[in-house]
Image (spheres, rainbow, N blue to C red):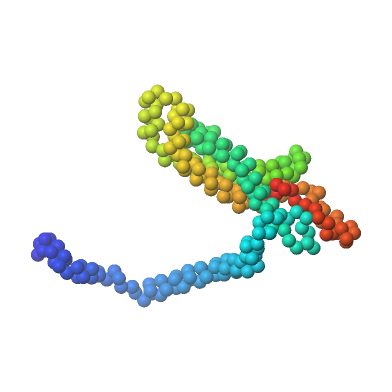
Length: 276
């Protein structure tokens, strides 16, 4: 039988061509048992991981879901709210997060983009390796570590007050590596032919980067900036130790030894720039 006859027979009997050959679809008893055991373990681990998640979501929705539909929650802050006064809202948290994120972006985006341009276009030798290694270290730093580092320098070393700008400095350390790595990868995706064509026309390298390379990778750079903002807005509360004023922190302790009638007196416990 020739190859043409086999092809013709396969086209006339498509079901026959799909029949298993060599016994590949047959699984022995031990293999089937191990497969079943692996499936059971996988689904059990998945169900175990979902239990706390569903529990937390259920608690948040049942206890706080009604507040999301209340206009009072979106139009009031926690100013004047004590442990004996019920009320308050999320205005201070929303405004503080937006202010801190914008201030962080103003400082972190130029540094991150220029660092990425240096690593891709100019980075050679020991300095470039040191910068890249530093960015890798910053990528894995938790937010609380960055906050304590800024606290140690800002408050302990220089003796400055705890203000919102200290939180911004901590968030800058968290946003820079995200912007650097995303911008670096986008710049590497720009074809070298575009650079070479610009160089062939006599355009300087710095102008090629500013007019050709960066505009080509602009959409990817914006994506990296948004990812960095998402991280710092999520970690904003963890960086609060640098923004809480000491006098506001100690005020509840002083009130505990004062006249009980003064406990319900309004007073801000945190600076307006705090994100929490």
